Image 1 (cartoon, one colour):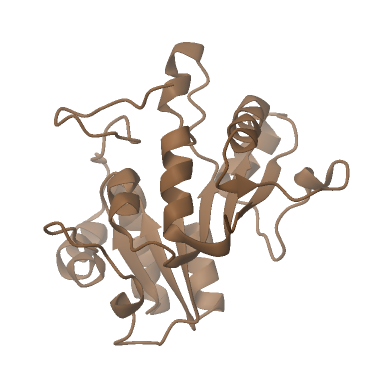
Image 2 (spheres, helix red, strand yellow; image 1 turned 180 degrees about the vertical axis):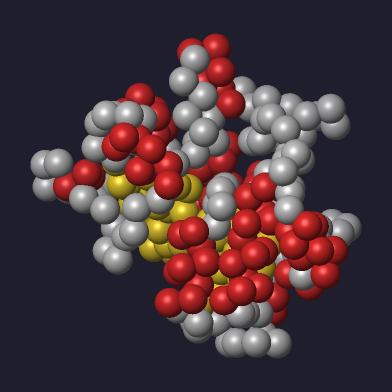
Length: 238
């Protein structure tokens, strides 16, 4: 399935509106005062080495990217728990960005950097073998068949994530939508860059170590959907 292109002929992964109608006054101030100091900018043709993004604060022992962090609950918590790890959050929806900025400000989190455009653009610019782990948690499932091609997991994005990840790096995927879980596994099985280690039966319903349910997961449980799927795929060393 070919990727959908933007008006400039580039592959894109984001669809929908970016601007929230309900940004609070505090969030608007944080957009102006805090976001510029945390935001990753893509300029020119050079690649981005993520480690120097954090060296004014820490010498990160790992770099972890979360794509589509929503309100930032998982990202903020993990960054607070692991101050020696550098975290990059990629999100385009202004409401989610505002919520995470508020958490960063209130909790005085220093080890997060943000990218607020389409994640494909960032993945293309990251130095090869520069990221230790990537999280994609409860992405938009685009359940209608005609919209399946909008799903983030694709041949292109798997290739880009594999390029950015270090050897034996991990791609974590979680969803409460069984069809999207099957979609992702089908793509992994035809992808030379990742493999799924052998798992015990039903182990894919066991949350990650130290996991705390997200609001999307709570919503799924309220609506009686099947247990969530938690996958971790290893980058191959070939």
